[in-house]
Length: 88
Image (cartoon, rainbow, N blue to C red; front, side, top):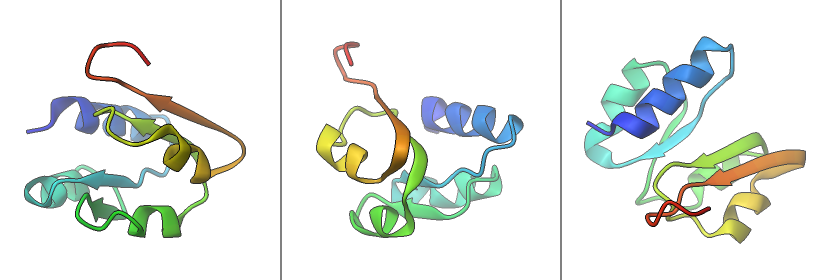
């Protein structure tokens, strides 16, 4: 199970946020059951962007290009990314 993405989603939900997420196909059902809605899969790279704009984008895997994350934001939105090397 993807603990960091799910934990981050659950924390945001606990604070009252509406959480959308992009996950692998095998995880989509479990994260939707955890309260994430809508759930997108990595295989469809444009669906999440088309559902925006968002107040915040948090890339827990560090694979989303910064320009793509910023393009999904509302004015004054926030982007945070985690890079595999821990910097970012």
